[in-house]
Image (cartoon, rainbow, N blue to C red; front, side):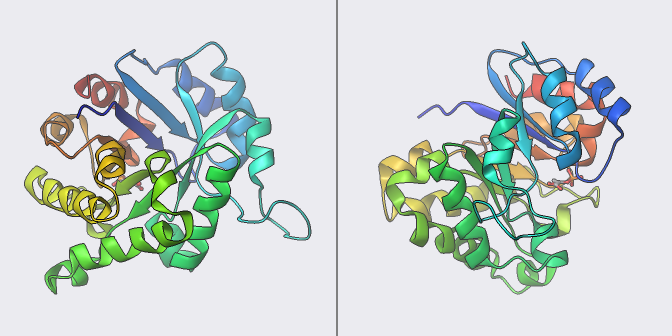
Length: 247
Ligand code: PEP
C-alpha cells in the first residue's frame, strides 16, 4: 500500500513575526508530499496569512482538550480553525516531560482534535533508558494504545503518528533507518491487531535529528511515511531538501 509522504516542521518556541514570514517565503512545496509547518501559537495568524495560496499546511504545537471557558493561558481547537490550522502536534516529548502531559490527557486532545475535523500528529517515543532496557516497543505501543482505546480503531486512520525517540530529539543523533523501521513496523503491527485495513492506512512519521543528509535513507524504509523535523525545519534550504527527498 502506498501512503502519501508527510514532512512536518516543528518550529517550537522560535522566531519573530518577521523571521517566520521570511522562513515561509523560502519554503518550496511539491505536489508529491504533504508539507506542514508548526509555528508557535502567537505567530499562527501571520503565518496563516503568509501561506495564502500555498499548498503548505499549518499546524499548532499543542491545543487544549477543552472547548472554551475558564482555562487561563490555553488555546482552543475553534481558535485554531479560525486561522486555517489543519494539523495539531500532540504528546510531543517536551510536552510530556516538561509540562507533565499524561497519556490520558494526550488521548483526550487527540479525540477532541478528530471531533472538529483536524488532523492530530500523535508523538510517541522511548527514552534512552527505556531503549537500553529493551522496552522501546512496549513504551511506544502503550502510548499509542492509550489513544486507540479512547478514539477507537475506526477513526484511527485520521491520526498521524510520529515516532520520536526522546534520545534523538535535538541531539544530532538520529536513530538509524533500521532502528526506526523496526519501531515503525512494531507500531503498525500493533494497530493491525485491531484492524489490518486501518494499520495500512496510518501514516507513521519519524522524528529525531532528521536532516537533509539522512532523510532519503529514512524515507526509503517501507514503514516510514515522512518526518517530523525540529531544528532543521528552521532553515528553509535544509527543510526544502528534506521535502525534496520525500518525493
Ligand atoms: C522534534 O522536536 O519534534 C524534533 C524531531 O526535533 P529535532 O529534529 O531537532 O531532533
